[in-house]
Length: 352
Ligand SMILES: Nc1ncnc2c1ncn2[C@@H]1O[C@H](COP(=O)(O)OP(=O)(O)O)[C@@H](O)[C@H]1O
Ligand SMILES: [Mg+2]
Image (tube, rainbow, N blue to C red; front, side):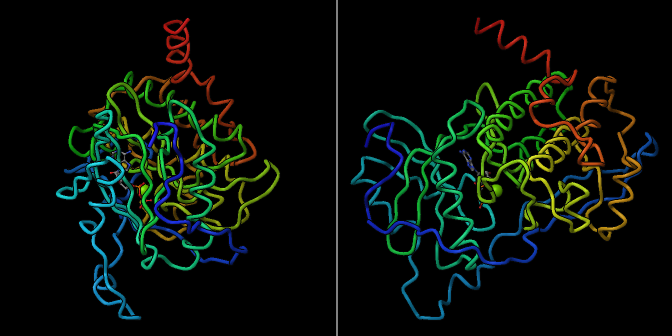
């Protein structure tokens, strides 16, 4: 296996592109506290959302067809034949449909993260529509601020996606463990994420699931990851599938109207910026959608008293969270926001 490889060969089975199917809400579950815009009485504990609910384990044990249930250990030898040592003792993380493990390529000691997806656990929409899109779009994405796909393997009912390994874990865990990030460092992260997003958008690919647990920390930077809900569309086409997490959703998604997925990505990244510096979610997702939309319209969220933020930081995430999508800056425009621009200029000065 070479470092350029993007497709493994355990099986000739390719996830086929299936015709589009209609889907319902794809929201993952989060909870949140109520907020109001102005600085005020601080909550005793700052709120951070729990992770996406893992797939119920009961369905793992019993398969309707009585087929053997393969566990990750069953694939260690197959990885070994590729020269890869898969560490099954500890998960790097898990999502709604996957578990992620660490592996080392013994040929060059390179570390990888391996996303293991059990196809039998997927809904038909995920299996036939979202997963094929994730793989085909991810292969096209090559940017320093997007986690890169290395190889894809299939065996029995499993699909393994090997990708570059982020040694510092995901951003949600980081903020939960360390509290809010200082504005300057968060601004560096925002500039990296915005460059990754602007690159995706320049390829007409929208992410549609931007949130802290889908951002991976490397030694010197952050990268966007989890392309499970990506969509390749031209800028005029509105999306109708409501994916992502409610806490990060733009008002147009909550209102259930067709939305421009590029502009809703910008909103979600604005929420990421807010959470990075405040260690709080701006909006309470337990509230009904119409109530959240009014809070979003009136910018009713709390910035804790203990957190000092400059006007350039606040005006930047507020611009990203512009209520009217038509007035919201594109990811390209956002590179010029005062919280983001200085870090881009610094990076280009360093590389120049
Ligand atoms: N490249 C990586 N390096 C380190 N940890 C990762 C990496 N990719 C994912 N993870 C961890 O695994 C979790 C789930 O991965 P993700 O791709 O988001 O799966 P899902 O599509 O099921 O949500 C992430 O939230 C993160 O904690
Ligand atoms: Mg995820």
